Image (cartoon, rainbow, N blue to C red; front, side, top):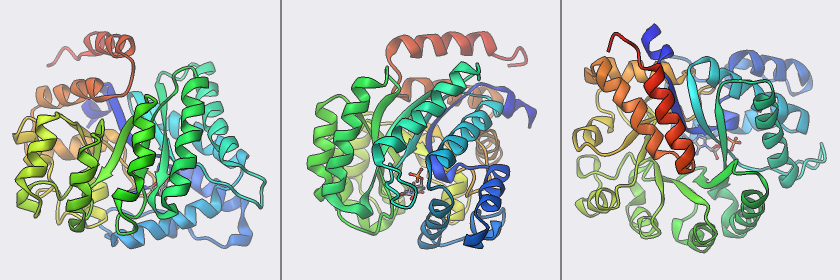
Length: 342
Ligand code: 5GP
C-alpha cells in the first residue's frame, strides 16, 4: 500500500469542510463544548452506510463547528498538509463561502481566509500546488448563486491564479439546474472553469442535458449518466464528444449509497470507454479515506496494474484547471518521480 502513497497524485474533487481529518475535527469539538457534538456525528466509518440525505446532515454538523476565520484557517491548513502528506502534489480545493453573523464572518472574508491558508502553506514550503474553486450550494437558490459568481470573479482577478473555477454542489434533490444557468454562463464567460456535480441521483437526466450544453469543464460523480445506470446514450455521447473529464469518488458513492458496491461503481464503465476519469476523495474526513486509499481500492476492485494506476494519476494532470505552464511542470515532476519498479 506504500506504492499508492508514494506515487505523486492530483486531487481535483475535495470539499473543504468534508475533508477535515479526525485530529482537527476533535480539536474543533473540544473548542466548542457547548455544542455537545460527538465525533461519531462528523464521520461515516468504514462498513457504515448512510443515505445521501444523512450525508448532508453531517455537513450541517460540521458547519456548526467551523464558523469563524480562526476555524477556517486551521481547517484549511490542516487539510492541505494532510493531502501533501498523502503524496498529493496538485490540489484543487473547493468550498462554499458562508456568512456567520455570530462570528462576524462574511463570504468575502471566508474566501480570503482560505486563500491565506493556501499562502501560509506555500510559505511553509509544503510540497503541494493548491488552487481554489468557489462553490455554489444549490440549496441557496439562483440569486445567491449569482452573488457567489460575482465574488468568484473578483477573486479570479486578484488571487494570482489561485481561484480558477466554480463548483455547483449541494443536495442534488433540491432545486433545478436550469435556474442556475445564468450564473453558470456568466462564470464561464468571465473565464472561470466549471466543475459541476451532475447526475448524482437518477432524477437528474433533464438537468444534466441542459448543463452539458454549457458545457462544463469537468463533471462531479456523473453516477447516473450512462444507460446501464438508467441514463441515456444522448448523455454519454455528449460527455464523450466534448471529452469532459469525470471526477469519480468511490468510497463517497458507496457510503452515500448512490452505488451499491465498489464492484458496481461506474468507474468501470468510463474506464472501459477510455474516457478521462480522475479518482478523487470528495470528503476525505466525512468518508474516512484519503486519495492513496482510493487509488488502492480502484486497483484491487478493478484489477489495475501498477502501470495502469500510474497512468491514471498522470492523466489527471491534464484534467486540472491549472495553466498550461503548470501542467508542463507537473508532467516533468511525474517523470522525475516515476518509480523504477514500473
Ligand atoms: P464546504 O463547501 O462547506 O467546504 O463543504 C461541504 C459542502 O460541500 C456541503 O455542504 C455540500 O454543499 C457540498 N458537498 C460535499 N460533498 C458533496 C457530495 O457528495 N455531493 C454534493 N452534491 N455536494 C457535496
